[in-house]
Amino acid sequence: MSFKVWMMEIRAQYLLLPVILSVVGGSLAMYNGAFDPINFLLFTAIMVLLHITVNTLNDYYDHKTGVDLHTNRTMFNGGTGIIQAGLLTPRQVMNAARLTYLLAAVMSAYLIANVGLELLPLVVLGMVFALFYTQTFARNMMGEIAAGLGLGFLPVLGAYMVHLPELNPGCLIMAVAAGILTFNLLLLNEFPDVEADRMGGRRNLVTLLGSKVAAKLYTVLTVSVYCILLTFVVLGTIPPLSLLGLITVPFAYKATAISFTDPGKIDLFVQGMTANVKVVLMTQALVAVGILASMFIQM
Image (cartoon, rainbow, N blue to C red; front, side, top):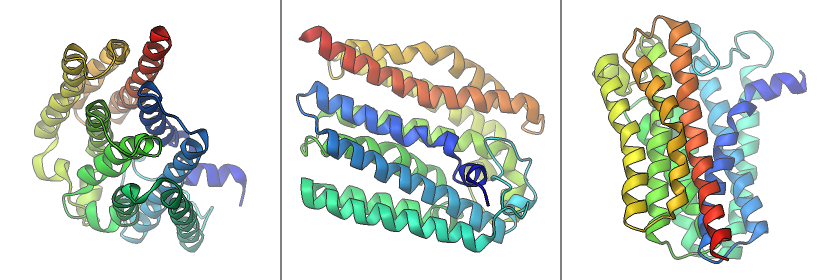
């Protein structure tokens, strides 16, 4: 086995998401007067490890249920294909998931002991979502919600609370926006896999609603993120420069427009999923930049 194979297996290119979520929470804490670099790095590492756990467990179980044998695989959906190609065995992938989960648990225990029991509910929920996402939540109409909470809402809260245990409205607002964006990240990526998911026993919003209704939901949620930024900047809950996140509106328009097209036209749909990833990552990164810039301007 090679380093490159393992990087493909853990989907290293997508591990930027937990890092950005941690930066959002950390930047808000810094804006409010507190920042602990050790806690920041430790929390970020935990988030990355849990994300790797989700990715590897997803590959393992989707191979076992046969979902990945029937997908139109792209860089955004359909699994990595690593197990199917014989580059890694299912056991190796499962062992990797166990290792990263164990490391995250040990590091989380240390962080809770260092920061306080206020973190315990968030950590427990996050680890539950990571461990049971594929086999429980994704098969029972809870996949999008579990992703939005476990890889969006909770990480932003946690990344703030490792510095300031008491939450403030701005943190909650950004956590909600992060949850919606991650919810949407999964939702759009499910479109091309509808038939494979049905065959493999997965039940999600796209299999329930159909792609046209799901596209409407995706559009409404995408618009809601920008409305949240505008509304709470006007109300003074988050810094004005948080509006830098609006720079991604053109990508959002492209993603929403393509969401109404036939997912079977995979080359076109990949363009929409690419734009969606840019919305998810860049919007939050730009908001974090805006928050930090606002802090320096006030100095």
